[in-house]
Length: 270
Image 1 (cartoon, one colour):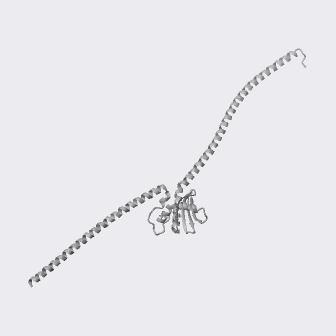
Image 2: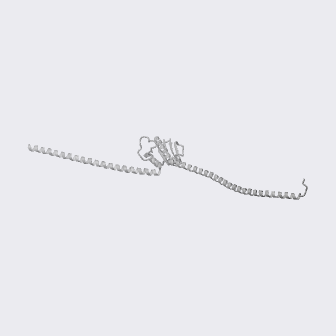
Image 3: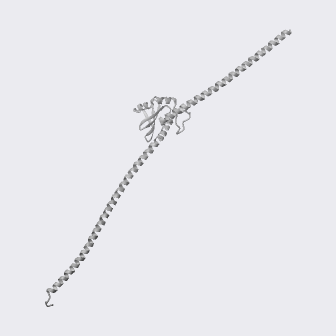
């Protein structure tokens, strides 16, 4: 009996030790799995962060390149679209569908459609040679928002969303205002330059006329002065000649009187 009891105790202790060892192993495996899971999560987070940084850098580089080549494209940047309506003056981002349509050639499509009579012009804004138009194709309930210069389409966005069409139109209209600012300033400066040049020509012509009048007056004054000098000299000479003639006249008169006395000499005086 004692041997059996001891055997049972030994068996119970062995089972307890075996269960503790298995529990310890299970706990150790669980700890290792948790540690591996944390390490993998951290590695994935780092990888995602690096990928996001690379994607943002590529997107910013692409936007900068497009903005340098096409100023209007800078207002339509590839960013997440908000569900709320954009604030006035805020650039409107293109949806992937709109970007794909735009890449497929909306400009050529609109150029073909505008020759027909099914397209309705809802709004148009002009600033200098730049303009923005909101067009509506009723058969397909589609809107075309166009940015153009000198009647030539520059960018065309196609959408079925009326709210987005209005927002893009406002953005394009604001863009025409910005683009035309330098052009309008140049036009005004050219007009001011032409006006100033014309005023300079008129003023110079007036100055030339005054100079001509002054030259004539000076020439006439010099001529009159010379004539006055000659006339004064002639007058002085005539004065001398007059005095000499008067002296001569008095001398002849005295001679006549003397001869008269001689002729009448010895004759009775009445």
